[in-house]
Image (cartoon, rainbow, N blue to C red; front, side):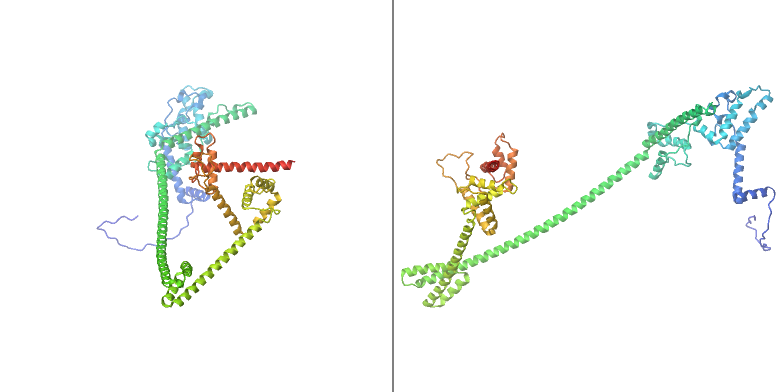
Amino acid sequence: MLLEARDDDETTVFKAAAASVQVLVEPVGRWFEAYIRRRSRNVSASFQELEEEEESSEESEDEELQLEEHPMLRTLDPKDWKNQDHYAVLGLPHLRYKATQKQIKAAHKSIVLKHHPDKRKAAGEQIVEGDNDYFTCITKAIEILSDPVKRRAFDSVDPTFDNSVPSKSEGKESFFEVFAPVFERNARWSSKKHGPSLGTMDSSFEEVDNFYSFWYNFDSWREFSYLDEEEKEKAECRDERRWIEKQNRASRAQRKKEEMNRIRTLVDTAYSCDPRIKKFKEEEKARKEAEKKAKAEAKKKEQEEKERVRQAELEAARLAKEKEEEEARQAAQQAKKEKEIQKKAIKKERQKLRTTCKNWNYFADSEADSVKMMEEVEKLCDRLELTSLQSLNEILASASKEDSKAAVEKQVEEVNAQLQKEKDAEVQARQAARSAEQASGGGGGGKGWNEDDLQLLIKAVNLFPAGTNARWEVIANYMNLHSTSGMKRTAKDVINKAKNLQKLDPLQKDEINRKAYEKFKKEHTSVPPSIDNALPSERFDATGSDGNAAPWTTEEQKLLEQALKTYPVNTPERWEKIAGAVPERSKKDCMKRYKELVEMVKAKKAAQEQVAAKNKK
């Protein structure tokens, strides 16, 4: 290595360096031994140097090893060797499970040189014969600690190990100071090296979760074979040896279970006292609350947007409706104005026609002709439209009396011809209606059917629908009981008439229904003559001034039936409450409808009973 030049020195090159030359060197001696070792292990020279450095460091540690001799070593009972502290016997109580095999051998060598029976005997000390000398404890200690299996068994029940678990009260006061050393000393039992540490208050969620996952799935190598009460080697036979093994396995499993429960209790206590868990839970709760709040706000905004759109649509519809109503109102006003104008124009033209004809004395010489022409003029005023009136008045204003008379007479003839056509058409319509009535009354075995019988038949067909037992016999009996014509109908008559009604034209059916309704309205709106001024009773059938003569709708019928079920017979003021449940119907209407329903049900049952009695006979 070149020396560093001083400030006042100068560097000068005298000659160029020679090129490197490769030389073959044959190893001998200890170098040859190192070469063979490297080649057999396939390692480099640098790796060999590292191993030598480690060996030298271990040797230096062994040289620096300090033993702490057991103060009660000479008083130990060799027979109670199982309860002794083997590390303390060899002078390694400060290293214990951390001591290496070289340290254990060095400690054993040192203590043997000092306490061997031959050494002590040479020094004049009295030696106990056999295995009763305390040197047997040293032999047992090196026997246990030099065997990896036996040493692990002894380390599992290390008498100096603290198995205690902190309480929750201790953990809550100073969590990290209390639990950190506990987890650190229990980590020696883990089958996995370099387990996660407890961490600090600033540890992340992943680090904390990894720590508790490790301890909740803790894999412990700790076993309790050292505490076996019986040794199977002392068994006299195979059966006794099996029994001893069975007892030992049971006790080991029990102690292992207690150990795992202790670890689980430790982890549960730490988890419940860990302030970071509480912090993470609060953060998670706050996050969920924030998400919930954001979701609620988004939903609220969405609803507000929908409501805004709906209100906008309603407003647009309202404006459109108002616009349409305004246009319709203006159109109606315009039509009304035009109608008024046309009405005034027609009135003016009619008055003009009357005045003109009056001035010409209605184109007649006698009073009788004058009155007749006056009627014809009034007929023209009623029948002619505005344009016809204007044309006729223009002719009358410019023509002579004879021309005016001819024009009026011509217009009268046209109006009379039109009236005659309308009258003929009406007569033909009446004849057609009469023919239809005669055709409808021609069936049923030659027996006449009036309008009351037709309506009673329609009512009976609706009252006894298809599927009723002996339907047409029941309908015939029902008509015979309620018919006012006095004619007896058979099931065959009823079937024939029902078929004829089905073949009728829809207009004829509508005409029959209209007449039936007019008859019903006439009957129910007629006021019976009163004998005196006394008030009618509540059960008076005819409707008074406050009655509703309109037919009962299906909805009103359902409301009445529900009210009858809701308010039974013993209910006070029953009919007032029933009337209140059926809108647009008074108390008398409800009572009358109820009476009609009762009579209808009774009639239906009577008709069915008669048919049943006939069938039995």
